[in-house]
Amino acid sequence: MFDRLLIFFLSKPGRISLLGAFMTRIGSFLLLIGLVGQVAVTAIESIKQLVPQAQTNVSITVADVLPEYLAMWIPEGGFGFGGALLLVAAGMTLVGMGKDYKRQLRA
Image (cartoon, rainbow, N blue to C red; front, top):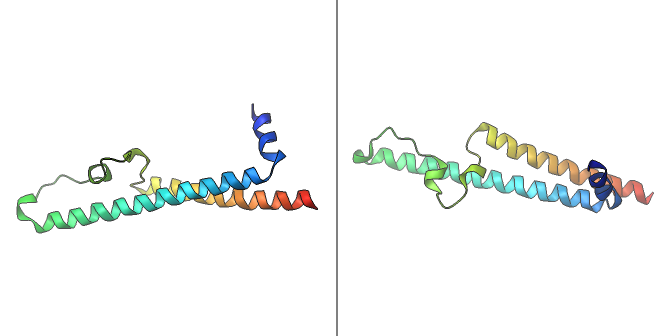
């Protein structure tokens, strides 16, 4: 199984770069949507503090702010943002590896 996967990527080095670019884009999108979610949660929490009738101890999460999106994929804490950063770093590494491998095959 892994042999086929290895042959698939090593037969055309551009596929490694494409996979890396895809991983980088997905990780960047996750970071961006997580940042937007955190800004929205902070804004709602601060507005809630201004209204005296809304003085409750219920914390608001990204799933409450963005209910139409699948909240399980939106990073909310350190582990989620760390995973998204790891995805971006791995994607950038794969892009570089694909370019280097392509260069070595030409030489």
